[in-house]
Amino acid sequence: MKIFKILAVALVAMLGFTACNNEPEHIYDDHSKDIVGTWTCLTDNYAEALIIKADGSALSTGYDGVDYWENVAGNVVVENGIVTMTFEDNDNFKGHFDIVPGMAFSIYTDEGERYTYNYCKEDLTEEVVGRWVWVDSNGKGSENMGIQTFNENGTGLFTGGYEEIDYKLNEETTYKVVGDLLIQNVPNDNPPYMVRRLTYNANGSSYGAILTTYSPATNYTASWLRVKQSLNLAGKAYAYNTAYVTSAKGIDEDFSIMGHIFNIAKIKASDFDVMFGADLFLAEFPNSNTMKHRFHIDGQDTGFDAQIVIEENKVTIDMSVVNPALRKVDMYMFQDADDSQLHMYMPTASFINYFANMELYALILEGEINQTDEAAIAKVFADMEARVESINVSFVLKALK
Image (cartoon, rainbow, N blue to C red; front, side, top):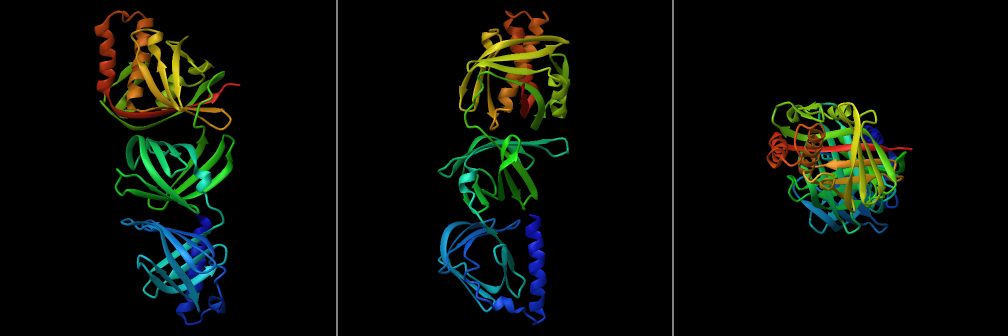
């Protein structure tokens, strides 16, 4: 966005001459060719993408915080430094015009109404198709994370949570990309549309392509890593690297999991570093049907093999095969382009079952609970459910060489 801001300042400076009736001669040049292409305008309360053809015909798609419009036909004419825009929906504009060809143009009125449009050299519609993962620490004690899928037909799915929204699980969305503008419809949100500017880099990181989104409404930039839409786990092994936590709500009380103290009301991502860090937690997949857990309990290496069922990115871990007292756990896993990272994503129900399983496994191993004591086993799960109102955790693991 730096170039955008610089251009805006430059355009304002140029337009200052107009106010002094000392207009530069270039504003009266013939700009009919210069305006051809895709142009996008994005502010905290207005978004529009304009596709202008050589004959001056145009299509407008946008959102103003209240109304959304798509492919509204119109016409754009620039003469003697004046732009006239007329559209089928009668949302027309006439005012002054200035341009830096191939970069940006500005339209404005004497009353102070102004819009600046960036030139889009390419349309990113095809580049966004696929699945993307985003995790980010905001430095304030909470975490942001999300999984976004963009399908070719303009539909999508979003899973995740961050400060501005509650956690969502596979929420259906629709979207449209015009140039570098992403307009996304989330029906259950208020407002129902979210507009962001896109930047795409096919080699944005050592892990693969990066899609960067910027929202002026929140002044927030997020970097999304492209991940596979199906898993390739067989023969892979991963070690814990870091964790992200969001939407953590629960009872303010300390409790123990495998000898480590947690408190849902105060939980931080770093709490898992103590439990899983320094290669204390390994996930190995000798084949596509088995996941080997390796971890420490009271300083002792231990673990177990569990059966898994993979459906695209959903993985069901059947721990009851290890011990009938343990429950099945559904979670979501994602690998980057070269399988060097594995994201394990747990919504609330997954967290409760997974960590109640781990606590119960440790208690049985240490002889604190008899694995045939149904009442004691049920209490472990009931206690975990009572502690946790909501929580979403993403573990990031790195491939072992």
